[in-house]
Image 1 (tube, rainbow over the protein chains, first blue to last red):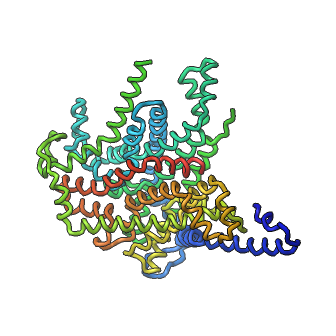
Image 2 (image 1 turned 180 degrees about the horizontal axis):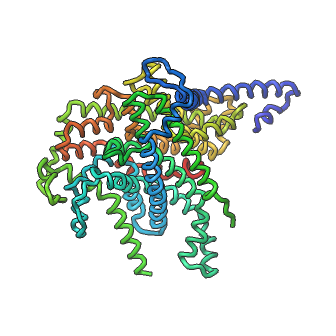
Image 3 (image 1 turned 90 degrees about the vertical axis):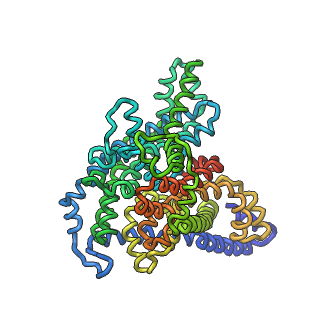
Length: 310
Length: 272
C-alpha cells in the first residue's frame, strides 16, 4: 500500500517512520474491531459448536443430567440402528435422483433464457418464482395438490392414467413425490448460476467453432459445456449438500412416514435430538452426515472440477 | 429458422406453466368455499370467489396477525444485524492489512462447507445453557457471522476504486469514518442484494423457529402456518389463503428487486 509514501515529503527519516508505525497500528486495531463481531460469532456458533458436536458424539446427554462419557458407543449403535440404515438409503436415493435431474433442468432453463428472446425478464421471473417461496408454502400447496382427490390426480385422469394414488400416503410414492416437488423448486435457483456463467462465455469462441463447421449441438457439447465445468461443479456440490440435509418438506408433509419411507438422515437427527432428547446420539449422527458430505464433495471435485483451457 | 423460434417460445411458455401454475392454482383454491375446494372432479376455475377467506384467516386464529408481525420484526432485525457485521468484516478483508487476514478470510470461506446439521445440536445445547430457548436471540445472534455475506461484501469492496478512500485519508479521516461515511454509501448495490437474500432467508426459515420457539404467541409465520394446518385441516381454502400471506410479499419483493437477486447470486455464488 502507499501509506509509507505519503509521509515522506520534507521531513527527516525518523518522523515518517513513526507516523507510519502509528498509522499501521491504528489500521490493525481498526481492522480487528471491524472483523470482531463476525469472528466472535463464528468462533462460538461454528467452531466451538463443531468441537462441541465432537464432544457430544462421545457422550450420552439428555439436556438435564450432565453428559456421561460412553466412548464409541454412539457410533457403534449407529451402524446397527435399523432407522439409520433406512434414513441413509432414503437420503442417498433422494440425492442420487434430485441432484442430476435438477442440475440438467437448471442448465436447460438457463440455455433457453440465454437466447435473445422477447420478455426475457418476465420468463426469468416466472421460472425463478418457486425459488423465493418458503418451504412451508410449497409443502402446504403440494399436500393439497397431491391429495387423493387433488388436482395432480385429476390431471393424470385427464391423460387417461390411473388416478387413485394417495401420493403422500403410499410408501412407494411418498419420497418420489417429495423429490419431484423439490426438483421443481430448486432447479431455478441454480439456473441463475448457469445464466451468469453462460453470459461470461465469449462469443468469439462460439463464432470460431461455427466457422470451423461445428453445428449448434457440437458447439454446446464441445465449447459451452467444458467452459461451464466450474459452475457445474458448484451446482452439483451445493445441490448435494442441500439434498443430504433435506428436512423441512419431510417434517411438514410426511413426518418421515408412511412406514419410514421418507425418513432422511436430517429428520432422524431432528427426532433423536428434539423428540427423544438423545443429544449425544444426534450429534454422532450429524458427524457421520458431515463425513458423508465431505467425501462426496472430494469425489465430485476429482471428477467434475477439471481445468479446461482454450 | 422461424419454426425454431416458435419452438423456443413454446418451451418457454410450457416451463412457465409448470413453474407458475401451483401459485395460480393455490390462489384460485384460496378463493373457494370449504365444500367446493374438496369436490371431485376438482373445479379449477369456479366462481363465485370468496375473497373474504383472507379476512377469515386473519380472524380465525387470534395469533395469525401476531405471527405476521413477529416474522416482519425478526426479519428486519436479522437483516440490519447482518448488513452491519458483514459490511464491517467485508471491508476489513477487502482493504485493510492486519496479521492473520488471509487465515481469517480462508477460515470464513471454509465454514460455508459446514452443513448446518452439524452445528444444530451443539448450538441448541449452548442456547439452552444461555437460557435463550423460546426467545428470538438464537435466531439473531449466530447470524452476526455470515460467511456468504462477508464474502459478498468483500468481493464488492474490492471492485471499488481506491481514490475516495485515499482522498478521505489525506484529509485525516479515521478508518471508521472512511468505512461509515465513504465506503458504506458506495456499497449500496451490494447491501441491497445482501438485504434481500437475508430477508428471504429469515422470512422463509422454518427449522430455526421450529427448534427454538415453543410458545405459539412467539411463532413466526412459517411455523404458525404449520400450527394452523394442524388446527384447520378441513379448511384448505383457509390454509392456502394463510400461506399466501407468506408467499405473496416475497414474490412482490422479488419482482421489484429482481436485478439485485440475480447480481447477488452471481457475485456470491460463482466465484466461491
